[in-house]
Amino acid sequence: MIHYRKILELHDEGISLRGIASSTGHSRQKVTQIIGLAEKKGLVCPLEEEMTGKWIEEFLFSEKTMEASGRHPLSFDYIHEELAKPNVTLSLLHHEYEAECRANQKIPYSYRSFLRHYSNYADKYKATLRIRRKPGEIMEVDWAGSTAFIIDRDTGEKVKAYMFVATLPCSQFSYAEASCNRQLEINSFQ
Image 1 (cartoon, helix red, strand yellow):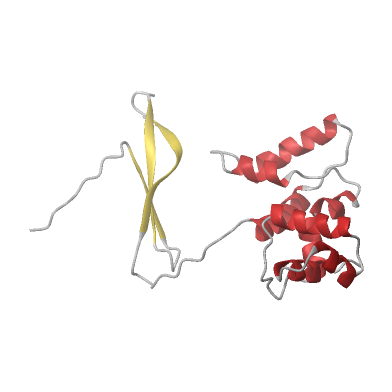
Image 2 (spheres, rainbow, N blue to C red; image 1 turned 180 degrees about the horizontal axis):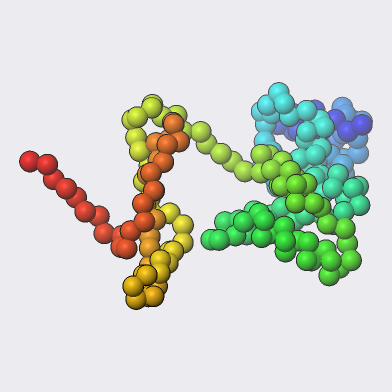
């Protein structure tokens, strides 16, 4: 069994590769591979308690566990990059993944497994920051999504519609309204 956590902690303490190899009983090549992969994937010390040896192994070698299932492996980096584009959903990416598998005569993951594996990837790799807010202190507002179209019943003309959304972050109560333009009307009370 490889002592992933111990290797990373010793490296963080400044122990040489040779020292780490002799201390853990692994070859220098293996120690170098683990440290290099951890640095590449952004795994840095101090490690949290839940980051056990098994967790670190799955984090560093996620493709190894997926290949053992006999299914066509997922490209998480590609999925993550594509999701940043407008109008791209996990459902669309799964459909493309299934089409690619059929073309290459490989076995795809089901949609549910696809979501589970991507969710695990996202939990480990994506940095998130929790913003603490007091209830009622702030409201988040924005023009949301792509431009929609409404068909005028009288003329049959397509009219652009923009969606305004306001949300209270603590309660998640939202208000949405379609508008024909993005002009802000300010009503002053005197």
